[in-house]
Length: 354
Image 1 (cartoon, rainbow, N blue to C red):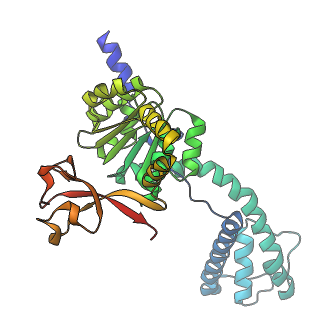
Image 2: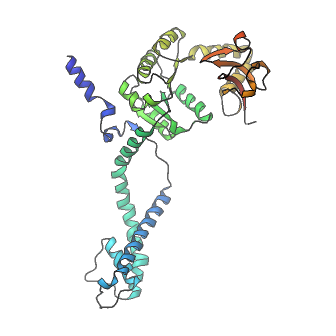
Image 3: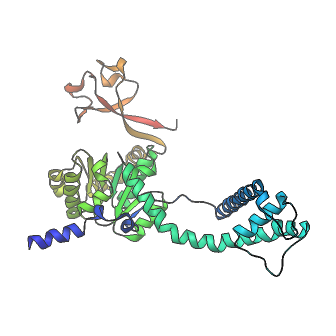
């Protein structure tokens, strides 16, 4: 039985599959391009090839003869290049005069090339899409480092990504994992790398490059799933910072025991804000402002400056809420942070756009 399970696991290793087998599972977002611009670029490339071919023929014109045994001009060479590269051959009808050949070069051939671009070019684009995706996946997996993996692209996952983007992170540094094709399509449209599959499987997380990630955000819809994902993520990425959202506070200790560095209880936080809003709605509005990095105020973290060492965090120009020392948050007002020490991080209120 153990041997059968081992064989099943070996077959199911996503990271050991050929790159072509990952197309459709791991998706690298495409850069949008105007169709007209794409056609113009293809036309310009085709014209460049014609010029190169004509120049080569003209430089070797002593080896060519036309039907009238005349010495070849550059116009003749260009004409020869056009009928050669467009795979067109003339037998019973052959343009003999320079005017007729000029018309073929200036009118017929561009129309022929335009047709080939629309017909053959589009067909080739469809046929090569899988190869291009495979190449991009291979290159991405080789270079991805210090990124953030977001498990779940529901409301919590989307808002977490919006906060990170508002804080200056680029979309290319975020990888989304989900099982819902609609969610994955929405994430890809936002310019994010996506992986289809359940993050409770170690092979799916490895496919996201979680072993090289700096942070992993677990924003699943179920607490039991969050625990399993956290266990798997901590095993794969022992040094990554893992932040988990749970619905019930009773599950906080389970998630922490599974390896989470930070736990956010979504239902209790929302409940507290709802209760506060009944009496002091302005407080809720300010909290929302602090949690939204786009405008107004935001809670941020920064390193202490050399001239601030030894002073009190309560006497700085910034409104300091706490001091992060050796990875632990100490709130302002406690004796342990009466004096700022080298290596401390300050948690303060930052003004955005002002």
